[in-house]
Structures are given as C-alpha cells and as structure tokens.
Amino acid sequence: MTGISLEEILNDPNSNLELEFIAGEEGLKKKIVVTDINRPGLALTGYLKYFEYKRVQVLGKTEMSYIESLGPKKKKVLFNKLFSYKILAIIVTWNQEIPNNLIKIAIKNNITLLRTSLPTTKLTTRMTIYLEDKLAPSTSIHGGFLDVYGVGVLILGKSGAGKSECALELVERGHRLIADDIVDIKRTASNTLIGSGAELIKHHMEVRGLGIINIKNLFGIGAIELSRGVELVVNLEEWSSSKEYDRLGLEEPTISILGIKIPQVIVPVRPGRNIAVIVEVAAMNHRLKEMGYHSAEEFNKELLGWIQGTPKS
Image 1: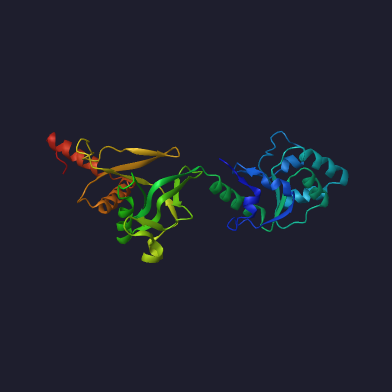
Image 2: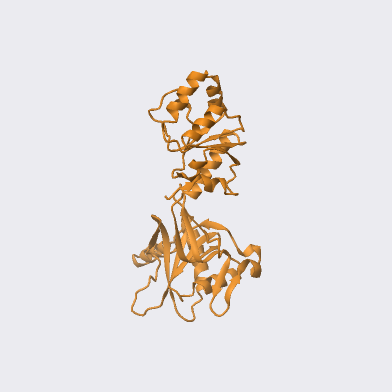
C-alpha cells in the first residue's frame, strides 16, 4: 500500500468526512497506510503500552471532556507525554472547541489537527470505509468488463482478439458496460475484487474502423454501470487446431488477480462463432454453479449411471 496523504483527504470532495483544517500544516504531507483509526482513551490516562500512535487519533466528547477536567499542570504533562510519540493526526469530532494549548503543541510537533461536525461514531465508520477503499491493493488490466445477467464478467485476450467487438455486441443485447480497454481492479478487505473504469476513458470504447464511441450517449444511462465485483473471467484466444479444448466443462480453471482466484473460461475464437452469446451462456452457467447446480457434473453422473446400467430415473 502506497498510502494516502492527509492533504489528499482534505482536498477530496467525495470523502464525505466534513473535515476542517485547524493546525499543523507541515503534517499534511504525512501518509496514512492503515485503515484502522484509534480513540486514545487509555493513552490519555497515561497507559501507553499499546498506544497505536501510527493511526489517526479521534477525540470524541468523552476524550475532550476528560482533557478539560484536568488542571493546567496535568494537562501539560499529558500533552508532552502524548506528543512525544510521532502521532499521525488528530481529529476532533462534534465540532468541539479545541484548547489553545492543544493547538500550540500540535503545531510544535508538526502534527495535523483537524475538526469535523460529524458525531464520533459516524466519523469513525465513514473514515474506515473511505480508507479501506483508498488503501485497497489495486491493479489495472487490459480488457473489457461488463455486467452480464448480474455477473461481473472480465473479458481478456490479446490485442485484436475481439474484446471490444464482443463487449459492444453484449451492450447491444442489453447488458451493461463497466469498462473497456483499461479495467481498474481493487481487492477489498473482504477479499473480493471490484472492477471499474479508468476515470479518463470511463464508458468510452474503441472500435476498429469506428474510433472512439461513448456508450452512455449512444445507448443511454441504462447501458453502463460504475463498478461491480469481478466474478468470472472469459479469456478469448485464437483457435488452434493443435490445442485440446475442454469439451465437457468438468475442468474448472482459475486465474489469480491480486492473490484472489477467479473462475476462468477459455473461449477459442474463429469466424462464425458468436462470442457474445457464448459469454452470455458462460455467465448464466456461472450463476447456476453459484446456486449449487453444475451442469457438466450432473451430465457426467447420468452418463456413468447409464454405462453402469443404472440410469438416473
């Protein structure tokens, strides 16, 4: 994880954290590299053995009222001890007033001090979700990504294999385009893969002979989708007479993306094959498998039963 700076979070209009900069401008370049945040209740009482100082510290009403209950000398000792650690940043919730001595010591130690009008629970929830998204391991893959019958299908293949043409036909048949050419993929905390389009070329498609087309403008808002989980990979490759292809579907090959194994279907391409229809059937077959029905295995059981003289009734 490369991390995200406090400055980036402050300048992000989509963060939904309602943060206000108070002090510690030099600390804005510091980067957050973990998704967890910390409420330093025990640390404020002086117990610092397991103090998670590398996380963003959140001061709610409980913490601030405890600080206010201390006399000037105890408050000074507490702040000096607390700020001897290289604290990443402090966020004060509920739009509470911040003591001047806390602001001064934050500036002295280059620690960014922020404030939000959000309640503490809302801030911690929103920030955890935000950081999980921003710090998720990610990669970019050359291919197409569509929602086909509710299944996130990633179409891969060498240049010229017909990925964009296949995606275009799927859109024309009523399925939704998420990305073409460049697919950005993130691995979430729950070990699922989420695919989306690169910001610059989102919902655009390059079709040889036509150039760049805008799917949203041509087919309407119902023809696109922002993101979806990657559930199935369809790999298009040129038909080779010397290669043996799976004829029954008993094999279940996978492909690893960001350490997560995704079911993969290898589809040989040659003139006359309707690849879009094959992708549709692959998506529907995947849904059946997810529901517990494996067509190839059921057929194989019936075949073995017939061979053994005990056909399925």
